[in-house]
Length: 361
Image (cartoon, rainbow, N blue to C red; front, side, top):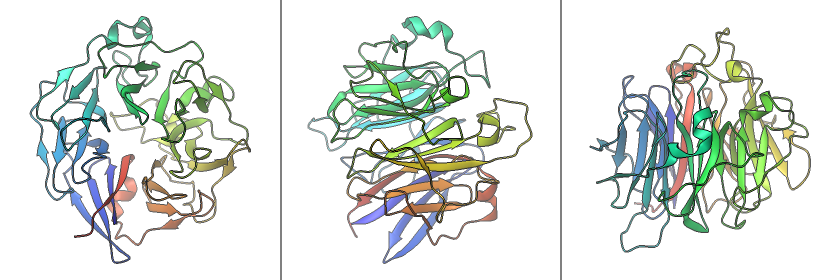
C-alpha cells in the first residue's frame, strides 16, 4: 500500500504520494479556484472531492492526476465542507456531502453526478443566531463528519453557529444542544468509539476551557477539557486510528494569529498579520502537552490542519505553511517529509488535508 495525501493550501492543491520511501509532489489548480476542503472516498480511494471558495466542487477519479468541475445545482459556488460517508449500498463509492456558504448541505448518492439539497437546515431555531464574524451578513458549513458506526448520521458544524446533527442522511435535522460548541472548526469521530465526537473550537476565546470538547452520546451532551492548553483558539483535531484516547490538536492565540487576516476567505479581525500557532497531544485523561520535538517553530506558522490514515496506527500528518510533517509516535515527535516545498507555499494558509492508502501500481 502507498500513502497518498491531498493538501489544500490557499491557492493550490498538492497531491503527494509516497514512492519507494520518497515523496512525489504534484501541483494542481491556480490562484482562481481557492481550494478549501477535500475528502477521499473510503470505498474508492482513487476518488476524491475538492470544495473551493470561488469555483464550486471538483472531482478526481484517478487518484488526483486529473480534476473536473462537477456541474451541480448548488445555490453557491463557495463549497466550504465536503465529506464521504461509507454507507452500505450496491455502488462502489460512498455517499458524498457538500456544505456551502450560505449554510446548505447537499447530498449525492451517485458519486457526485447528481445532487439534492438536504433541506431544513436553516429552519433550526439556532439559525437566527448564525453569523460568521468575517462576513457577518452570512454563515457557512464549516465541517461535515459522518458517523463511522452509523453512516446515515452526520455531525455538522456551522462556524460561529452550532454543531447540529442529522440521523437520516439530511432528511431531518436536530439542533445543537445548549452546552455544545458554537464555533467548532473541526469535528472527528472514531470507529472504535461509538457515539463519540471530538471538537476543536474557537469557543475557548470566549469561555474558559472550551478550546476542546468531546461528546460520548452522539452530540447530546458535551464535556470540555483544556488542561495544559495555553493557546485557546482551537482549529484542528485528529485521533490515532489505533487508539480513540490519543488525540492531537492545533491551536493559536486567536483568529488573528491563526490565519491570514487579509484574506477574505477567513478575515475576522483588523489585526497585524503575525501568525503564531502550535500543536498539542493528549493521551487518555492526561493534560494536554505541547508538541515541540520536530514540530515547526510557532512564529510565522498559520494554524496547521491534520489527517490520519486508517491503517497507520499512532501516525498523524500535519499540513503547515512550512511543510508537511508526520508523527509515528502519537504526536510525541515529528519529522518533515522530504518534499520540494516552494517559497510560495510558505505564504499560504493550510486549508484542509486528507490522507489515504492506495494499492501499489
